[in-house]
Amino acid sequence: MTEQAFLVLTALADESRHGYGVVQEVERLSEGRVQLRIGTLYGVLDRLSADELVTLDREEAHQGRLRRYYRLTDRGARALEAEAVRLAEHARYATERLRARHAGGTA
Image 1 (cartoon, one colour):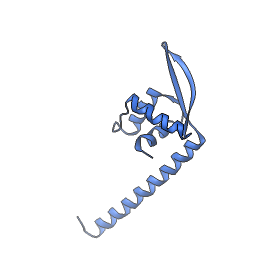
Image 2 (tube, rainbow, N blue to C red):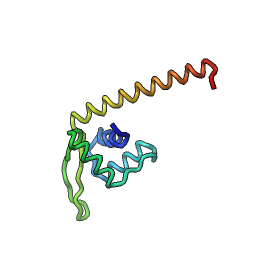
Image 3 (cartoon, rainbow, N blue to C red):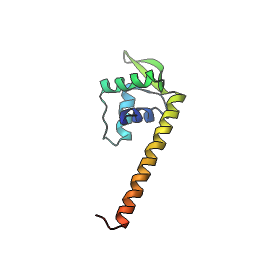
Image 4 (spheres, rainbow, N blue to C red):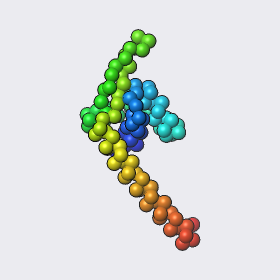
């Protein structure tokens, strides 16, 4: 799973959001490190939708424009959880090895 897909799924984990809301939440979650362009976002959403990880929740008119809200599916929640566990395990392995390196006096 790409970092962008992981962050989009995470942004949708607690509530449905429209495209710009997802962009803002990804930026917040990544502390500004990941800034999705709208075109990139919709490419990610299309792939996640094709994999049935997200789905269109609803459409609302806002200031004369149609906003599409997306939500995480149950399958998407399971995929996000599995990826979060995988990443946490990798982070733990790296941390353990770095501790061992520092304990051994290697600089």
